[in-house]
Each structure stands twice: as C-alpha cells, then as structure tokens.
Image (cartoon, rainbow, N blue to C red; front, side):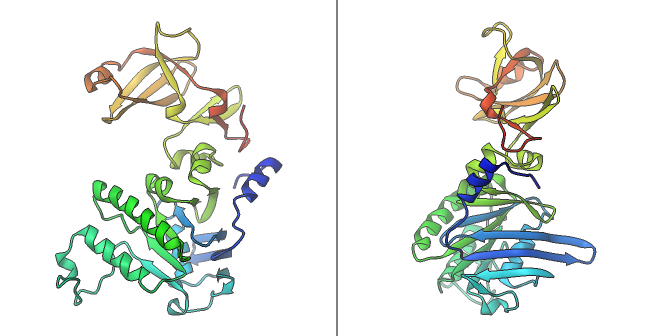
Length: 321
C-alpha cells in the first residue's frame, strides 16, 4: 500500500463521506490457503454510485458477496446504515443484487415473453427493474453489463447512470463491480481499485486516473508509461505526450524511433523506443490522419515532450516534479 504525505492525507480525508450507507471494517475472507479479501476498510455514502474495480481474483466480487450476505467474513464487520449486519442472512439485509447472468425465473414472463425470448438488453433491464422495485437501501451490481456487446454495453452505461441519478434522490446507493476500467471511469462517483484482496487506491475517477497511488493502479486504470531517469521512476499518460517528427519544433525532448503503430479509428497509438532506454506509448487523435499516413510513420525518428506537472513519481506517491 502507498504511503501518503500530510497534504495528500488531508485531500483524501475531504472525500470521506459524512454519512455512510455501507461501512466495511477490517474485512478478511479466505478460501483454504487463498486470501480473497485481506483487511478491507471502506465507507460508501448514501446515493453514491460506487465501483469496486479490479482484475479477476482481486477480491472485488468476494467483497460484494460479503456485503450481500452470500459469504461470511472470517474477520471484520459489515454495517448498513450504521447497523451491524455481519451475522445476518441475505434476506435480512436491506439490499438487492443484480447478477451478471440476470438470474431471471425461466417459468415467468414479461409482456407474455419468457426470459429466453428476450434480448440481452431486455433481460438486463428487467433484472434491474426487479431489483429496484422494492426500493432497497443498497443495490449491488455484479458485472451486469459483461454479457452485452460493446455498443449495447455503452448505451446501458448511460442508461444505468441516469437511473442511478433518479433513484439516488430516494436514497438508493449503487455498489457496482467491474473489471472494465472505462466502465468504472464513466459511471462512478468514486471507485476503489482492488489488487490481491486489498484496496490499492480510493478516490474519484479523475483522482485515480490523473494521480495513481501505485504502479499497479497506473498500469491497470488506463494505459500508462513508466520511465526511469536519473534514479527517478515516474509515469506519464500517453495522451499527455507531444510527439514531434524530426525537423518539427525546437529540437527539445527525448529522441526515439517509432517501433509500432496501432490505428484505432478515432486515434492512433504509437509505440516509441527511446534512445536513452525504455519505450513510451503515445496517443494522437486522427484529426487529419488516415490509416495509411499513420502506418507509414513506422520507423520514423521522433522527439517526445511532456509537461513536468503531467508526470507522477512512483517512488514518492502523490508528488510531482
């Protein structure tokens, strides 16, 4: 876990909710020799859209199941609206869960159509409506958009956030699990990044993306570049780097050569090998660049520049040069 300087600690304390719908205190859960959740402390405010983000096996889903009551912690306490529910059964907790497979009853119908006759988007909407109809204090969502195609998933992200804004006025808190970083950044009021059963960083999407607390967060949330120069290890995001082809600009920056080019439609991703060692990924919008133009730049010499305030020191978390 990263340490914080005093100013950083004050900044972090400013994001702690004054009222709490979900409070986790020292949660630990093991399955044999595998520690799935390792000492998690967390507070979630009423009406928040809060995301548990992390790769497979990071502990995010187990944490959600502990809140739901489907699992019991080995150590720690779970509070909902200030009430200790650690030992309560799922039906005794004021929560509902939306599962990734929707868990719709196959013998029941919606508008005379059974679940297997509905599209993925329709099943998702029905599962969400069923979970919201009795107005639980906390709605738990376990990767509910994971089975949808990209376009529908993006549409449902917007719709789900709109629904959350509407129901938050009556006090329903959303706790959302995903491994999709874009989904977490798009939808969350705040998020917790999980790794090896622990929370690596907690904050708003902008805080987590712009100021990653650890190298893991920098690499997992978005694409990040890590460089070592003069004993300093730091990161800089691809979109913060300016790339100049030889002959352009004033000649400053780090020289290198484009090793590979990935054309992604709206933008192009360039992999640049630096003369001083290491490589950086650079992203450029394709305002006037065609795929042919982008691909022809492979092998060209370039210079890379970035502003000091856009670098983040990995050995002194929170510090800028």
